[in-house]
Length: 272
Image (spheres, rainbow, N blue to C red):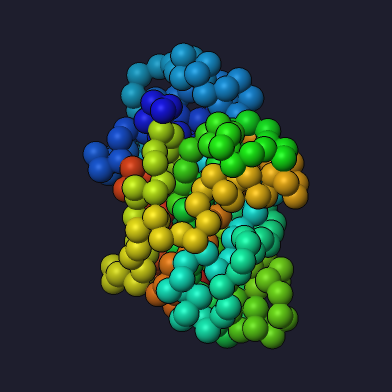
């Protein structure tokens, strides 16, 4: 198994860089980091870690960025039985895929903007799988070899538009509708983890990830039969039960042990 490290990406003025975060559960406020001298998606993780440079520093004054820059965000619907029941939907016989545009990405600490076109926008806490090696038509038994690590995702959804349109593109695709972060954690077994979503400190979702109908290896293999997965691509694995609406002024946090906490503020459309 890959060593357990946490990789985050930051902007400092006009440049961006990857850095190592300390272990989850030992976060300082603000956390401290050590800058990597190479991009792990270009040079590979081992070389990037070997080129870690400089002393530890605080993230104060830095801007969090999404921890990967995917060419595509592949999301999975109806992957938890209890969520299927709460949505009164039918269970799929194979993974149900849809795409979110990269323009929907939002970093840790960002602001989810509720669009004027929707009267009901929901949170959906999910596990994100970050691809580290290109994958095309790979067998399930080798799928995890192509995974760099895992992150937290909030698959924000305009629920009323989803029902109105009968498909997911508009409802899932607004700018800021894909918070991701705070980092990529390597060396984890996702089946041993649990996910939790809180709104204004109140727990709304809590589930073992082992309850996913289709596990990570199956999803990576399945998606790779349809489209080539490239380094940095993101798969959002579906949400457990407990989804609900967001309102201006809310704070929503998706957390997974070993990865950390992805927190977003909620506001109305810009200019309102």
